Structure formats: C-alpha cells, structure tokens
Picture 1 (spheres, one colour):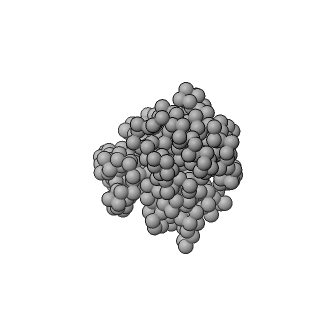
Picture 2 (cartoon, one colour):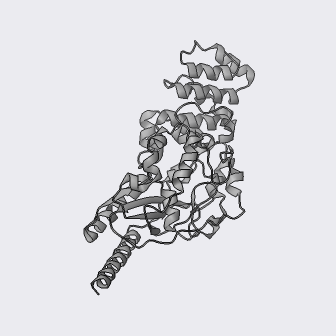
Picture 3 (cartoon, helix red, strand yellow):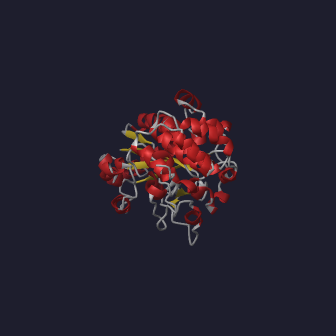
Amino acid sequence: MPEDRETERANKRRSALTAFLREEARAQGFDLCRITRPDAIPEAAVRLGQFLDKGHHGTMGWMEETRDRRADPRVLWSETRSIAVFGLNYGPDEDPRGILDKRDKAAISVYAQNRDYHDIIKGRLKEIATRFAARSKEDVKVFVDTAPVMEKPLAGAAGLGWQGKHTNLVSRAFGSWLFLGSMFTTADLEPDQPEVDHCGSCRACLDICPTSAFPAPYQLDARRCISYLTIEHKGPIDPELRPMIGNRIYGCDDCLAVCPWNKFASAASEMKLVARDDLKEPSIAFLLDLDDPTFRTFFSGSPVKRIGRDRFIRNVLIAAGNSRERSLTEKCRELAEDPSPVVRGMAVWALSQLMTAGEFRAFAAQRHGEADEEVRAEWKLAGVL
C-alpha cells in the first residue's frame, strides 16, 4: 500500500524531528519544550478583543495596532504548521515579598534581577532554530515577547501550564516562574495535549494585588497594574495608586509569589539564571543618586535599562515618598531641580510625603516658578499652587 508507506514515513519523520527538537531544547537549558498547532487558541481573539475594547491595555497602543496578528498565529505567518513553546524556570530561591517590609530598600521584580531575558532566550532559540532548520530543511522563526505572539495561550495549548486567574502562566512543575519563547515552523511536528486549569476556587493572586488590578478572575486591567505602571507607563503615575506601590520600583511579583503551585516547583536546570546580588535589595538612597551615565552603566545588560533613567528615577521617588525615611529628603530636594519634568514632578510628591507641612511650604517658597504643566499639577496636588 503506497499510501500506508507514505503515511508511515511521514509519521516517523514527525516523531524524529519532534524528539530532535526536545533534545536541542534540553541542551540549551530549557526546562520545558512542548508543541501545538497554530489554530489551537481560537478563544484568544475574543479575550484579546475584550481586553482592548475595555481599554485595559492603557497606553500600550502597539497591542491595538497588532491585534489581528496577535490573535491568530496564522496571520503573523500563514505557512506555520507547528509552534514549539519553550519554558525556562527563573524561580527565586526565596519569597521575593520579603523586601516589601524594608522601607529603605527598593524591590525589583525577580525576572529583572538577571540579564535581560529577551537576550538570553533569543540567543538560545536561535541556536535551536539553526540546528533544527538544518536537520529538517524547513523554515523557522523564533519569537521572545517582543513580537505580536500570544505566548501564554500558546503555552497552555502546548501543555506547559495554564493561564491562572492572574492571567500569567502557571505550571505544575515550576509554579508561576517561567520565561517563555516560541519557534514557528513549517515542519509538521507531534502536538502535545493542552493543560487544564488547576486553579480551582483559589483566588490568592487576586486578593493580594496591592492596586486591585484584577476586575475579575482571568482579567487584568493594566492601568492599575504596578508592573505596567513602573515599566510601560511613561508619564506621571496616578496619585491614588502611588501609596499602594510601596517600594516596588520595577515590576511587581506579588501575584506570582503567592501562587500555591510554587511550592510544588521542581528544581531549575543546571543553566538556571542567577540574580545579581546588587539588584536583590538595592538601597533607595543609592538609586536616587543615579544620573544617566551611571544608570546606564549600573543596569548594563538588565531589562531595567530599557525604561531609561528618568522613568526609573520617577519610580524610585515614589518608593522614597512611601518610605517616610526623612534621611532621603535632601536627595529628593536635589531631584526637584532635575532637567526631566517627570523626575521633578515626582520629587515634589516625594517631598510632600517626607517633609512636615511647614517644611514643605518653606521649600516651596524658595522656588522660582515652574514652566512645565505636569510639574505644576504636582505642586497643586500638594496644596502649594
């Protein structure tokens, strides 16, 4: 039977290429590698549309611009037959929420305490893709977060885990601590079974959110999310939300860290990413001193560098104001004269939290006016103008 022999050959090739890909993933230090089809997430388009139509994406206009490509992998690349999703464990050695009680320290999200994961994963995926393309004679494309790919739904469809109520991926093997990357290919590979939702009645991730950024389970309003506010949002941060941010200066790990599945997490691979010691508990005082050159040097190779010094210092000033550490007052006074309006404005707010009412009025009286409207708004908020 010629057709039977052809089918048998195709199945053997599919199985061999899938095994080869998994072995390459292990060799590059990935903890998981699973396969899905490009048509495996039909519900993603509806959920994405609801998210965008409600304005929950905030100022991330690029999400609206890439809506169609993001919702359907076949729009992004019509020739795709299989999608491999890779997971890399970056789980911390201890609960990252411990720093939140240290008022003079700044909390940087666990993922940003390493080298930029985009660079790490993209490099490893390119190695895999090159070897896979040579073996299979098929076309491949690799993506890590920056392209319009809905990696979390694809990861769920591929069986790496499921999207929890906090909308992040949860794995029975690695909890909420997985970096994701994907490889699209024209090769026909063996698909894995999707993972089912194991959240049950648990709502720990929803209840712990400092800013109530989850209007409902499985829904995120980025406009209230500390990760969005401290990383993606470019202007002044809503005064109502500033006290809730605490000392979180880059991202927020609360909803990830509280997930009960973290306690079942397996040990990471030998190629586990190692956090920089100087990013685990940096002092707010040290960070307030960073000018642009020192900021770029200190955060070289870190994802923090991508938001720029001014937006970063804005975040640190919020932490300074929330700390109520009067020893930070002088540094904040200096930053009230900073060339950047977003820095000057947040310095005003920080000083209004650190100074007594009399001290703040006296400081305001020494000022010689402010031309920037957003900074003037901060003075008005503080009751001076």
